[in-house]
Length: 157
Image (cartoon, rainbow, N blue to C red; front, side, top):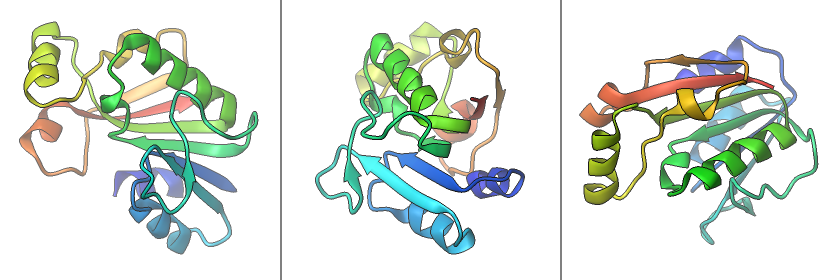
């Protein structure tokens, strides 16, 4: 798992996953890093952790060393919402933010996926201008879409 590989490279005491769903990643992280505080938020009422949105994270400033979002931002359908989410992630995070998201500069591809698949691809290079970040074309997801458009993004907070 790419996230686990990245976490092994850094020192951290706490991590928040945005879009934790059924807490699958949280359980893995909690088992591999038992000394870390591991929390999650999700907009689903089925979440086993705390209800919350990426655009309004229910934690105080600099609460977590690491923030992680895996394929969550593709469901935010407006650019201002993505900008709010990134601003919130920077507010709550201390050291790093990791994203596993779909990315393309091609507006026609973005439009096709929005209409026919119901999720949004963003041009993260544009959205992250001015931040200390790196994008790597890698994913641990199996589908052709993710192998073609999947990126792992690291933001130094």
